[in-house]
Image 1: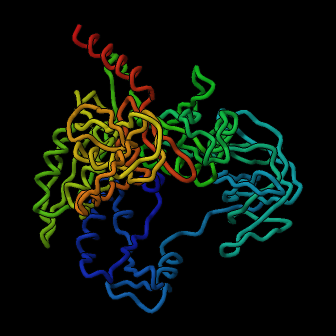
Image 2: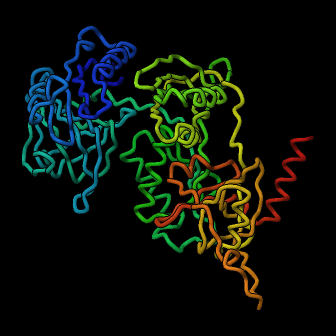
Image 3: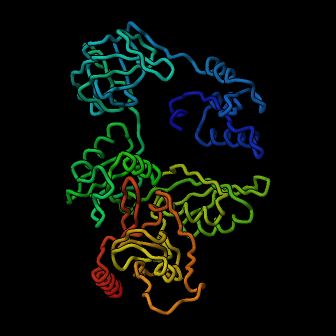
Length: 496
C-alpha cells in the first residue's frame, strides 16, 4: 500500500509453486484484485510476474521455474528504474534503519539521494519537527552482498551506513550544512494495541532472569524506540510499570520474545485496544480486515465465532479442493484471543492474516473468555495425585514435579468462573498395601501454550510472567483470600 501510494511499480513473485496444492493462477488473480483495491494506477496494475521456488534458489517467468534466480534479477534490472541522482547537488540522505556497533556507536542506514559524502564530513541533522542540529559522519560504509565495507567517500545512489553519530532517529534527514533541505519523512501508522510491561512481582522473581529491575526494563524499552518506529512507550504513575503500544498482538509479541531471549524477566498485562475520539465526540475503535481460508466443514464454526465478535462478512468464495475463502471486517478487540480458538475450530488447518482497516464507531459489547481459570491454592511442587483431581475440573497447563506459587494459573476451568485447586497435595501413606491399579496415576498430557497463545489467554485480572526459561500465567492478586474479597466486592458493585 505504501509503495503504491508513492508511485512505485512492483514485481510480483509467487513463491512455493512446487507445492502439490499450489494455485498460482488464483493467487495472481487475487493479487491483481488487491492492487485495484489499493488504488493502483493502470501502469502499476500491469506488473511483471515471477514464479519461484525460493528454498531451491529457482525462479522463472512461468509456473515451471528455471534452474536459478537469474530471471528475477533480469526483471529487477528491466522494470525497476535506476535512482535519479545528482552527485553535484547538495547532500541529502534519509535515515530508514538504525543499528549499533559495539565500537563505533549508533549506525544510520539509508540511501544517499544526492551529493557526495566523505568520512569526517560535517552534516546537518534535520529532525522530524524541523529542528536542525550539527552532526559528523565519522565512519562510512557501503554494502557488498551481506557485508559492510568501510570506504572514504560515497556518491549519490548508494545505500550507505554512517557510524559514530551522536544521536539519530529513523525518518530524519542528514543534509549539507550550507543547504539543509529535509526529504519527505516516512509516515508510520499509529499503534492500535497496548499492554503494560512491569517488573516481575511473583514469588519466583529473580530466579531465572538476568535483568529484572525497573531501571533495566525501562532502558531496554526506550532503547527499542530507536529502531522500532511503530512502538510507543510511556511511563505510568508506578515506577515499575510502563505502557507499551504497538501495531497489534504480533508486534508486541515479537518484542516480548526478543527481550525474553536477551535474559529479561518481567510481566505483561492483557492487550487492550487504543480508542480515539471523533470530532463529534463519538468513540472510535480500530478495525482489521481479516482474510481466512478454511475447510468447508469448519467454515460454519468460523463464521459463527466472527459474528459473535462483531465481525461483518465482506466476501465468501469457494476456492476449490474443499476450501472456502472469507473476508471479514472485525474490531481489533474482537480478534484479541481469537487465533487459538480459530486454530482449535479448524483443527490447525485454517489460514488467517489481517490488515489494518481503519478506525470506525464502536461496534458494541463483545463477550470475553467463556472459561475461568484453575488457580493454585498454595505454593509447592505439583504431584500426580493432586493433578488427577484437578484435571477433572478442566484442562491443565502443567504436569507433576513443577514448582508453583499461590495465585498461579495452572489450568483452564471447564466452567465460567475461576476456582482454586490444590495441585501440591500428597497421597497419605498407610500400611495397607494398595492394588496395582490404585497405584498407577495416568494424567492427560498438559496443554503446552506458545507465548502468543498465553498472551491471548489472559483475562483482565491476570498477568503473564515472562522469564528466559518459562512464562507463567498468574492472577494480579495472588492471595486467595484477598482475591475472593475483591471478587465479591466487584460483584456487589455490579449488582448495585
